Image 1 (cartoon, rainbow over the protein chains, first blue to last red):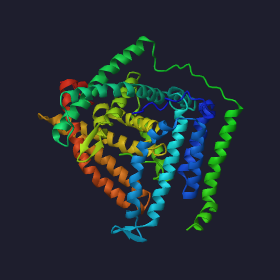
Image 2: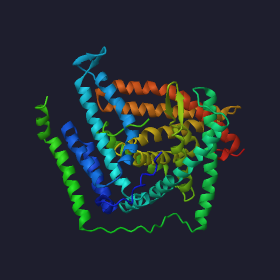
Image 3: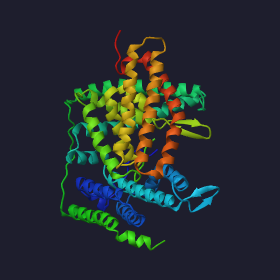
Image 4: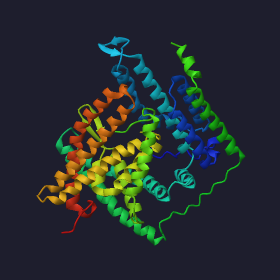
Length: 262
Length: 203
């Protein structure tokens, strides 16, 4: 499972060279504006821009596809359920269930918006090292405690993933097969409990190690940021896109065009 | 279960963000240095534990475990779950960035309510106490989350009413599974390392 979002952060691209602080704010604004969209044509324009930004970031195709698989698994059912459960007049019947075009339209809108936002998230966090992204967030005035905890959690996630795999292997070696019964639940309960106990003991060691290295409640990082005109030019482009998306969507300009389509 | 991007309306997810920040601020009061690694490490464990797949007939489900988070972390459970959600949005793109607030209130709120239920065990004393209250905490955590999810979907409009009801009903078997798991785990922790359970009193 590819948990390290920043695996390809070293790949050179205009997005990679963008000052992470400016990148975060600009693309964050774009995400916010996409969340506000209400018409499908606007959403399509949005996803085209999201794809363009992703292509510019030069992140590997297989990496993106793997990440998207989780999202798609969640979103596909919407397409299947929404048209059939939409209240109001049904256009026709499909397999005995009332089918409403409005439901399909809504599901499509949600799908395209969600996909655009996820692609942009990849562009933001896939193009910088995770700790660099976190330091950028700290520079944008996120609380230091939260940033510290995010960094620790990210780091220990990989440690426990390995530990879980080890424990799972040893269970399988002893003949464990997961079934839909209470016995499996009991074993999983003990499994989670063991993970918790081991992690708890680990935190004591981690904290003592940190104290021994002079930890006093703050993380000191050697990450520095400097921005130049290029960064702000990129930011301006993105902000203009974000603004025009929302303006076009809400002014009815795109809506009138949409009406003419069907 | 998380809500994904693009579904909920701005007023709802905006208000949820504000609510999340408020609750996080309150539940993080007087948090000292030592708790930072502790909460982070336990958040990582729950993050990983939620990847375990439990077979359900031909399909499988992932555990939510927010009741258990409440049992182990007490008030700090809220920020732990919020961090888990933030990381899920960043790493997996699962859930979503705009709905971090909604998901936090949904799952984190469930953890806090579960913690309150768990604390009621001090009024009782019988052999299987930790199992029963752990199971209750697990169940409450799940059903609270399911209700908030259904509510959030319904605020978006009539179109989602059927989905909202389906979601709520689907949470019932999940609730039973989570309850058993949380109960077993609480009992296990009592035997192996009781100080991990929040509100533990040395007798």
